[in-house]
Each structure stands twice: as structure tokens, then as C-alpha cells.
Image (cartoon, rainbow, N blue to C red; front, side):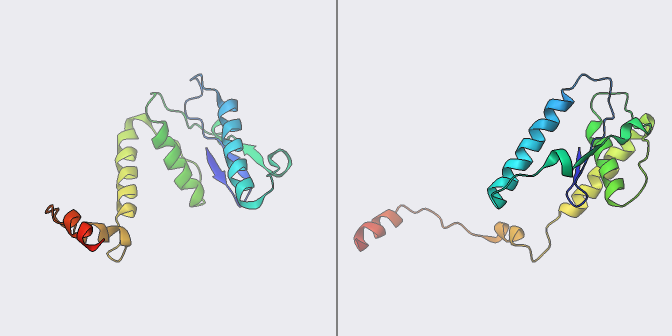
Amino acid sequence: MIIDLEQHLFIQFDSLPAHDLPRRQNLERLIHILNTQYYLMHDTNINFRTAWALSDPSEDFDLYQNDVHSCGVHLLIQAKAYTNHERHKPIPQDKINLYRHQTAEDILQKAEPKSDDSISDISTWRVPKHDGKAAQREQQTK
């Protein structure tokens, strides 16, 4: 599921349509979570029924997988195509590992912290050694 906040659009990519998933229930749960978050921030609800649309491009394209463990790769490839304003592309099953490795590489390259990122500073922190005297010093200052 891709959620386009600007276009008020849910895009459901179902690369394994033969699998028996509670799609409607999952969408309703997702809408509930989004609405709860929005309500907590803005003190009002989102009108999903009139202001939002649901698109299912997997009905129009050959986006099907033939295994039960590649749905994440399919979704990430289609999400990337959508955000880059590219056409959705079918992923041949014999190339799924190539797409899986390429997607992992893309994620890892973008996940590396910048040298000035505060997260990278964590490794330079030093924890003082506990010598047993810290509690003693604390008692003396009281």
C-alpha cells in the first residue's frame, strides 16, 4: 500500500492476488490509524469517503509474483517507480533476486549516517567505569 498524502490517494499493489488476505479489513485498520494520528494532531477527522480515492493498478498491469515471499520487493520497486513518476514495471520472477539485492543496496546506501549526524556521535561517547566509589562520593556530598 502506498499512501500519497498530497493526492489523497491509496494505491494498493497486490502482487499476489490469489493469496487469501483480508485486504478490506487491512485497509480499514490503516484508515483508522491514520485518522487517529490526524485527529490527535488537528482535533478533527479526515473524510476518507469523499476526499480520498483507492487505486489498484495491479489489476491493470502484470505485477504478479509466483512465490509467497517477494511481496516486499514488489512493493518497494513499485513505490520507487511511483515516487519517481515512472511507469510501473513487471518484475520477472527469474530476476527477483537481482531486484532484491538492488533494493537492499539502495536502502543501505541511503541509511548510512552522515559524518555530522548526531547518531554517529553515539559511538564516540564514553561511559565512565564503575569503580564502586561513585556511590560512596554521592553519599559523602549529601
